[in-house]
Image (tube, rainbow, N blue to C red; front, side):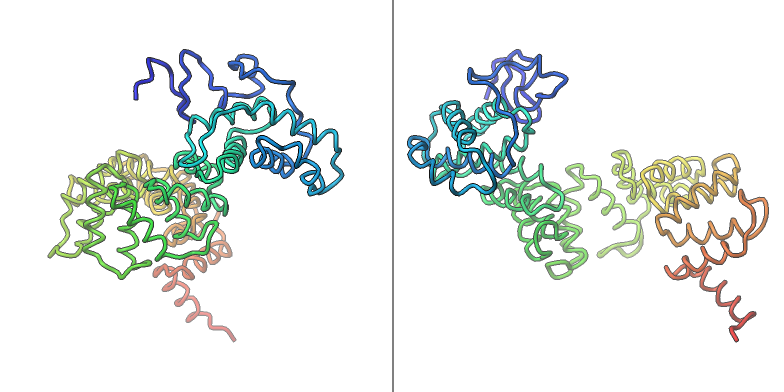
Amino acid sequence: MANNGGRICPKCGMNLGQKNLCPICDRTEENSGNTPPGPEMSDSIPLSQTADYISRAIGFIGEHPDDWDNEFNAFFDGLAGDSDFDEVYDFCSTLHDSIRIDAPTSGSIPGSLTRQVMTILRDLIPELTGNEARALALDYLRKRMRTAVPGAEDCLRLGNSYYYGDAEAAKWYRLAADQGSAEAQVMLGRCYYSGQGVNRNCAEAVKWFRLAADQDNVEALYRLGICCYWGQGVPQNFDEADRLFRRAAEQGNAEAQNMVGEYYYFGGSGLLEPNFKDAVKWFRLAADQGNADAQYHLGYCCKYGWGVDQDDAQAAEWYRKAAEQGHGLAQNDLGVLYAQGRGVEKDRTEALKWFRLAAERKDPDGLKDLANCYAVADRGVEPDKGTFLKWNRMAAELGQHRAIKLLSEIHQQWPRS
């Protein structure tokens, strides 16, 4: 739909016309003086009561838009705490007089109506955040409109405001997902996959990922592929996983592009042997989007000349990009390049820095290489037998074979009495 040249708020979607600020999303102390005025109404109400009181009062007015004063005594008696009768009455009266809207009685709650009520509520209670106002507005409209349900976009926005880990997120995502929102279906699937706000249930996650994937949602294709790859909530099926990864990768999903690269790199199902050239192609597509795993893989291919010309400097560049994102394997391998002076100026201090960062991420090779720095002099730190053994033990506990072999030899030379 055309917006007649007006600006659209990128956060809530309101048509701002020629205004610079959104009356919902841009209300802060710094810009409140420049915020376009809302509808005429009484003085702002201080947020002196609890959030529960505010929420219940708004819901009460929504349930009784025409006869609220006749029902007020029962509402007031139901409030907890030492609420002042006159203050509560005045609040409800101001709220009722302010929210004068024409609302349908069924169907989906229009987003424009939600934003209208949000603006009113934030003029009444300036302390409300945008998401708080959205939740209160939807609660009011659900009760006012009786059989209506919030629109999928509003539900998704509210779900996103609670995520990560809040049960409220799953509630709002479900309302949006039931209306067919592919993005909400993905987010609800993520809640079930990781057990955030709901009991972990991979089968339920697969259900929602599949519904979104049927709408060709790129993230859903990738996440459903992961479930198929690992057999989570669905029988393990590498061919199906590869098909899903390719569909997502061809639409530009970096995580899926990296998985397709791994398929060629390791020689996935249907391949007789690895195809490093095609692996590099997909790794590069993902790496250019900032995917740390792909950047590490591409650096590794450059270091050993697999599918690309051998180039230590290029390897160091891609390792660094991944390492700066906290990729433990890349941090350790970049440290190795500094220790050996390959592709970069030899620098033991810089090598020690990257080994330590890798070790902090519990990378087994990083732990072992950090231990080696304490073995002899001239490795960026003073030798220390105790620290050397400590890092080796930690590496061995994570299965690092060189550390396991070393500790075994030490125990043979100095068996415990």
